[in-house]
Length: 183
Image (tube, rainbow, N blue to C red; front, side, top):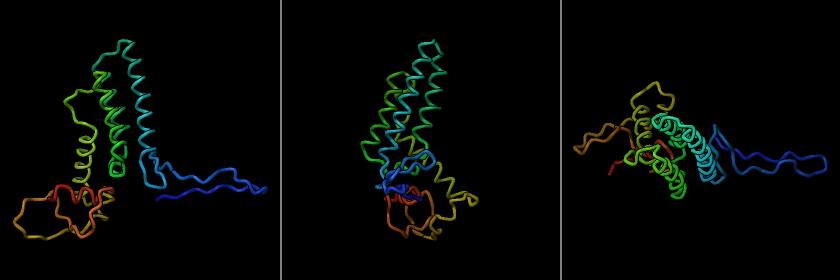
């Protein structure tokens, strides 16, 4: 749910607070245009600060395997937090900024170059989460999935048997994954 907070008006008629065109919900900054650019900017800044801390630890002779584990656990967690909900709303520039953080980790020998990119990590995470959502009837979001479809076509198998009766949507998580790889 998104809301715009309005100004608190003083008796003299002047506002104390101006209208807010963005909200931070569970750590994710959402603007009035559903843009994730502000959120990505914040995440990239926090990752840069964490990379600086990791480099300070490296200067104090910390083991490189430990530094790689810290990089993966801290940086990737920050980059992938709420990615299922926000990735569809990111622009290409936002995605390049996120990929740049991964490249800095590769350049600093904290992340192997042959490991998945940010886009691949998001895709793997989304696939795992969607599969769990479809297969676990106790999942709280299972009830908002489309109805099951009984099709008896002799086509290649789909990842799910959900009805695709609504419009394709590349922004929202469930439609994005429901329509993935159907062509």
